[in-house]
Picture 1: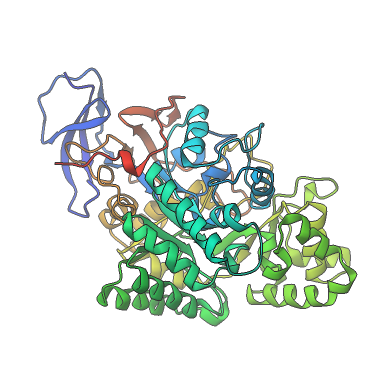
Picture 2 (picture 1 turned 180 degrees about the vertical axis):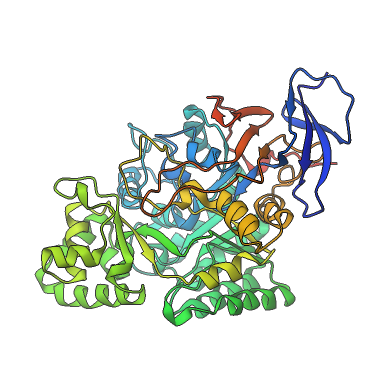
Length: 536
């Protein structure tokens, strides 16, 4: 007897092929049979009439490692149909950790909005981190990458310099150890210190290790605004030199100097593929980005860690230089009226979340740079921002490319417990927004293509061979959604609104959503590349 039979749904299997009416039978955590009108006995039957059955979505660029210690069910992702999330993106990882460096990494990660367990960082490698996360009891799977920032800090701290030969070798060894333990690859965040201090040669050496292990190199590239195309060329050159499989994170054309150049970006990647470079990309379907407000502070001010950053921001002798460079970066991001502050927790700033930097500059009668410096100092670096600096036409152009995967760049949040805080709606709406707005309403791309961009495409980019497709032997991470009602309800002004239309969600054959209600089941795992079962 099968454990579950899903009957009468329209199957979109993730391959990009045409929809068809098929039944799917589950044998525990795997798909046992797929066929028309299966006459099989099953312990449970799910009627799928009027619904689409697809693989669970794979969020190839998520940041729920920032929130899973406080929200292990990751509810905002469940209602989007996500069953696996790739974490450790943008270089922001939780391992490796040198002995004695736990507090340094913890303080660094808190300015990037990470919530750590009450006891802080107690692990030092991928295995220890995975064990601690497993204790939380996950609803969905996470597939961690090694964060280059953590890797560099473990070898040489927050120094603004090239590594010595010994330090570089230490990074190589630490990366190899993490990959041997099951990490899926490495990410870089080349706009964030200490990643921004790394020269291309350092990255090539690490990417060569990834190539040896057939692991993915993902990159928040060195610039997404004025230096965008130079940064893309650096990534391509790194691929040529290392042979590594590359993934450009949250592909975008940021700033008015790049408006309308989305097609050029896609052609750059296509040209590199024609030359033999294995390069892909992902994207979230919004015209605003979000990150820490410290991103507009020049990299040199971050050298030495958070404590040194706060000291420099308070140094009267550095104010003229800081103001000039911060105001310059704000201008490149479309100005102070396009930056919305998020994540203010201390007094007296708690009520400022959701206000723009321009509004605060007017309120406080000061320059935008002074607003940034004041908030970062008073919040000890723990303040975020949403940046409205992209053109909708470029979002559409990039989204229409069938080779660009969908990734949220968002957190797993709770709509009630987190509801008072301004945040980016992508944490609640990324995948349903594509299906509802861009597929059903705008008809920008076919439903089958959209599902492929959320399932088999990211699975293959990651190197995960037993997820992303509805076929016998594949893991039973499955989604049933209503194509007529699926969509996002979250907005920039009301972001904590759950998506609609996802009816059933199964992780390893167990329901985490049933009839649109969270079941409380916790079948999620920390996936290890080394444990992946190859299909015969």
